[in-house]
Amino acid sequence: MTKNLLVELGLEELPAYVVTPSEKQLGEKMAAFLDDNRLSYESIQTFSTPRRLAVRVIGLADQQSDLTEDFKGPSKKIALDADGNFSKAAQGFVRGKGLTVDDIEFREVKGEEYVYVTKHEAGKPAKEVLAG
Image 1 (cartoon, one colour):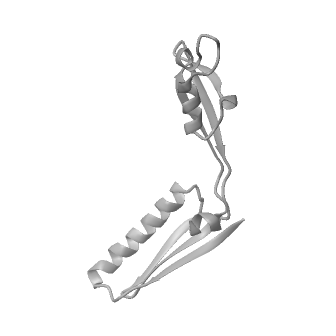
Image 2 (tube, helix red, strand yellow):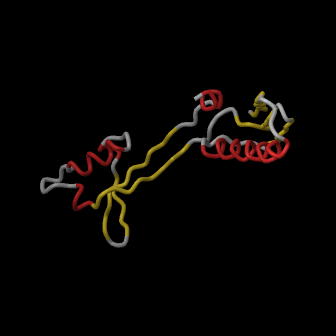
Image 3 (tube, rainbow, N blue to C red):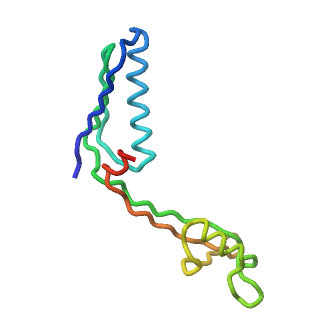
């Protein structure tokens, strides 16, 4: 489901030469913010007067898209000690990603095996992202 979003800024009177560039920049910054935060939308419209700047987002998704990322860690030689237990390097790597050693898998890259973890982040509601 999608919604529309209107953000209006009331300002002191802007000089005429500043209004159009400010309107353009507001639209570009809103698009970049939504893209960076995985919020899809249909289109963005901007409006301006010397005392107001506004941006309308049409068809804004009500939730972020989910994110799945793969992270490459140390080689298997470094990740496992002589007894086959995970080394401090492997433990630190997964802890830094907010995961556990149970999430480790090994993948071969150019003839050598490396630690990989996959992190899944569920999308948050748009209200939460926009308020944050």
